[in-house]
Length: 293
Image 1 (cartoon, rainbow, N blue to C red):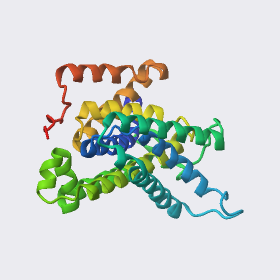
Image 2: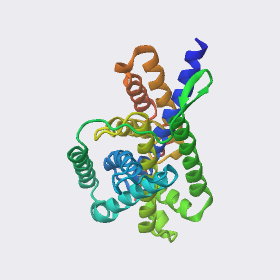
Image 3: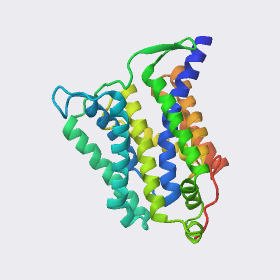
């Protein structure tokens, strides 16, 4: 019994850290620009495939880059893809939320179709870091452990950036009131570009470790993005702290549900929690009323 409890505790902590990364990127983009970015899921999927390609001798025959080079390179590529999405499309239509939402759906769908055309629907397995270690009476892969550590390192660096630097505080100010931030001299275009880069990098990190944990498939982003939406609503739209707390709530709920009821019931309790929060706390755990511009 104790070993089962410790296994749930460890497994939940690992997956929740990745959920938090995805949700934070999603909520930052919505909080700053009011954009429901469904293409965020395609960036998650792209992170897994870019890492897989760079890890193998696909680009240069019989040449494989070391993982310590591949990982930051893959994250940087996804961050640039996110920036390209904003600069090439979203910034021209972001004043119309419905058109922007539909455009990101099209981008996500197109990205999935491209992946299907190139790689097919078969799963590709890879490991970021091979091997496993015994932890709290259960075996934990180095891949999951690295995902947990790097996720929290990324969250810590983001928290420091948002709370302790002028650039980060300008993002926070814009998420509270775009007009108020503009009146204080904040460059909204700069804030938007930095936000999309950060969100893309977080999606890339999460995608790499999700692919290493499960396998890279063109549709691997659907469940994580749906969970990110649930997490953001529960935690409060625009709240980083709320996203972290809600990510762990949902992560542990899923892990416990799978352990007790089986894989088929994985998302049931998460939806129940979402409905309860919508009825009792429509703004989420740490949400706020929107400022009318």
